Amino acid sequence: MGRAEKDLGQVVASFCEEHSLFDQGDRVVVGVSGGADSTALLHILLELAPKWKLTLAVAHLNHKLRGRDAEEDQEFVTGLAQKHNLPTFIESEAVEELAKRRGEGTEEAGRFARYLLFNRAKKRFSAQKVALGHTASDLIETFLARLMRGSASGLYSIAPKRSDDVVRPLLGVWRRDILTYLLENDIPFREDVTNLDENYERNRIRHQLLPLLREEFNPRVEEALMRTVLLLSRDEEYLGVQAEQALSTASSEGESVPDKDETILKTTPLAKLHPAVLSRIIRLLASRLSPGYPPSAERVEGLMELIYAGGSGCWWLLPNFGAEVSSGKVRFFCDDSAKVADKRYSTAVDHSRPKTTLSVPGETRIGEEVSIIQVVIIPKDEYSPSPADESALTLLLDAEKVKGKLHARAPKKGDRFRPQGLGGSKLLSDLFTDLKIPVWERKRAVVIEDGEGILGVVGLRADERATPDESSQKYMLISLLE
Image (cartoon, rainbow, N blue to C red; front, side):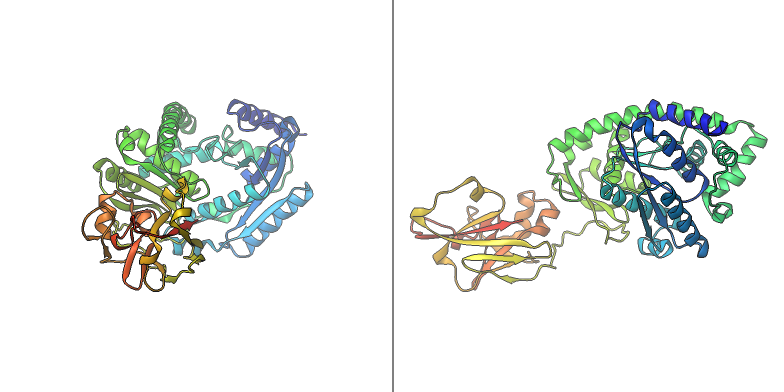
């Protein structure tokens, strides 16, 4: 072991302990591009692995941006992993094409693709952490980039440990220390020629702005900026804790479904929060539901204005991550098929679900999500209501008042019926509004009809003509099984 290896290993170990980056026995996916920083990270973690009983794996994304050089990067990383008998997770993604599809730059698209890979590798390896090779130099460069851009993701630009268990063990060392370590210990690495391409903002900061600041203002400008970042980090840590607590409180009052890529919160408590806390809640949900590049300041501010104003609308925070505000609730959702849109929300319902003839009695699959409609005929004297029958997923009818075949379909414009207990006809869209049904629930609503028209909406109301009464002899219980 060389002197630089020993010294740098100790610095990194101290940094990891200070920020509690690893727990004993962690399984760790290490992102390795083949460049200097990530190669050094892998070697240092191999050295420190016995200290915390870490089990390592390697993840690498071929961005398909540099032709044969990219293929050689992949071969280098594969060989490095094989040399140390480490599991590998290697994928390829044509990042330029991805950027066009997502309507963003190649840097942002590359970051998005890498984080998707890291998340998949983490699940497949049953890992607790994902370790990335960002250094103190990266932190300063990102700080300056976000300062000039007016970013919503905070001036404290790169955290040692994120809420999604991404850790950065090298944030306590400078890039020059990494290069010294590699050279003194004869560790090979790949040179990325794009690091010299000044079409990229980060390279202009590295090769133009920082040298100018060192020469004209402060020869130790990086250290000065680091002191500023560390001071800001205290504020960020406190505000982050406040955001986590506020989100936890709001989530306990919400309707989130753990197995779905969405979070539903009430807007009233959110609208009472300080903007510094609300903005961090929005970015926190973005990082959880759509890991990758953070939403811009304009996107976050736009959604905050919608919430504070008590309005309704759909707002895209990222190309695949948006929020719907409706009927006193906000639904954060992830949709990888979505496109960038600044459009305000349309109250139109989803017409993509075709009309389906139902088996009576029996079960019928409907819709792309493969929900099941169950129809049961029950003699009146055998019917005993259960809590399930009174849930939001059932509809009780007089079986003898149903005429012809039974169908299920999505709501459509102009739907009108006579809801039970309202004493007259009403547009379904108006009923949705009166009952404060959020827009996303309207899209999922199931209308039941027979040969004479609408019989009711599952979980909402039956039409008066089919509502059971004292003369009913047989009931029809319709249930939506999701």
